[in-house]
Amino acid sequence: MKAFLLCALLSLLSCHYVLVVERQGQVIFEKILCDGKFTIVFVHSVEKTMVEECFTIEPDGSLILFEARYTSYGAGLPSDAEGGFAYENGKFVLKLHRRFERITLRVSHIEGHGILFSDGTVWFKDIANVNDALTIYVKVLPSLKLKIF
Picture (cartoon, rainbow, N blue to C red):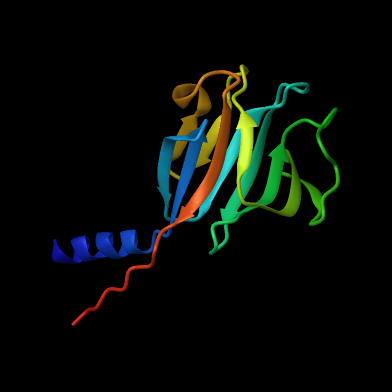
């Protein structure tokens, strides 16, 4: 039991980021990210197919869009990227490296708009209203030093 608790504590100590979603300056959602990754998902307004924008977090809290995935190819969906363009497992994949401090978006009236995490999904419609402007950013937690005697 002690070993389990120690492992759980060490796991939490390795979590350095909190993803924050704000609406009009008010925090409406927060989640600790231990893996430093998340994906914004939405249904493309023209193609009506799912788009995944995959992010990783830099040590300073910057958000890096490193990949975009989608299943259809048409109006408004890019076909070139600085890191390459491929077709993998039935999806078009763009390799990217675009840095953001914050992401601002509007909640869509189309179902399927949210943030995918390794352990689940939060849908924007469950935390905000259609057309609300949301701001997404990451807070970096201070590192905790643990002395083991």
